Image 1 (tube, one colour):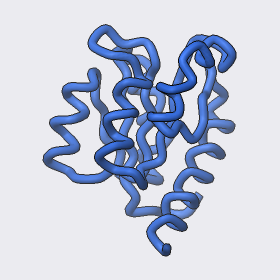
Image 2: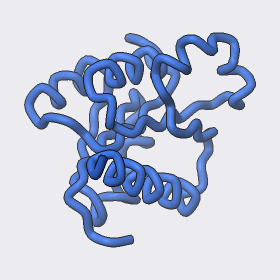
Image 3: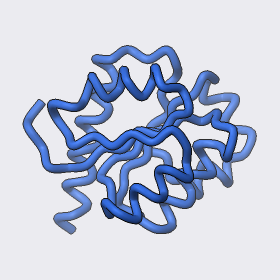
Image 4: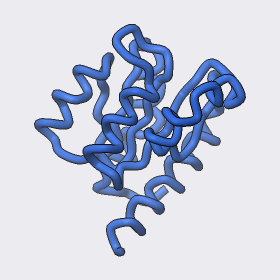
Length: 133
């Protein structure tokens, strides 16, 4: 994976997941970790737009889809990836929310680190292409 200045944010209320994803990507992206959507929003207010945000679906404060919908409205170019303990079928219950969040990919837990690396690399390419337009 090439070195990149693109910023990656991970939002998850489980510290183990934050640590694992950080270790997977820290050499490739400046990686920002947030243990709640509120913390993530505060970080974004300071750091600015993230190229890629990986968010857990199940968090106490709000769902990942709700959080990513807010991001989509504010930063339409940010690539949004949803981590979920459920199959995508379970998420189809509310297609309007998924549509509003403009989710690039849903990744089911437990994920394979190599698969996640591939998805994030593709997301980085999509983000860079969106900046060229």
